[in-house]
Amino acid sequence: MELLEMSECSPSLTREPLDAEQAAGVARVFKALGDPVRLRILSIVASRAGGEVCVCDITGSFELSQPTISHHLKVLKEVGLLTSERRASWVYYRLVPETLGELSALLDVPATV
Image (cartoon, rainbow, N blue to C red):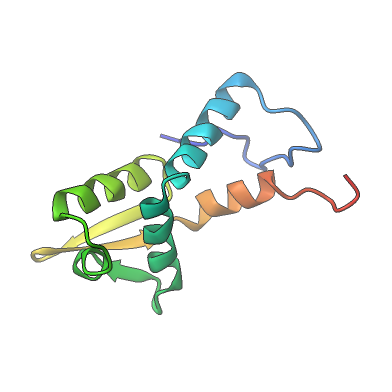
């Protein structure tokens, strides 16, 4: 499922207005990013050498319970910002560069606006 529900070549906000479906998809992503814990999780994954992080390393970075961290990871996966892969008893998380690229293209506003 394409969660951003945007065209193949995401338009900048200054080139054409979003339709209702596109706006709803983008809003879900920004809502997920609006939580400080989720934003930190995304930052941890993005800044990790090799581009992936074991859930055990994410959990250790917070003073939150494992189920709470799992909830935040689930939200980030549902909006298409993260993907995961289970290896034995651990799960590894990676960014989804396409989703970040779509957000970046959407927010690419010339300085003259």
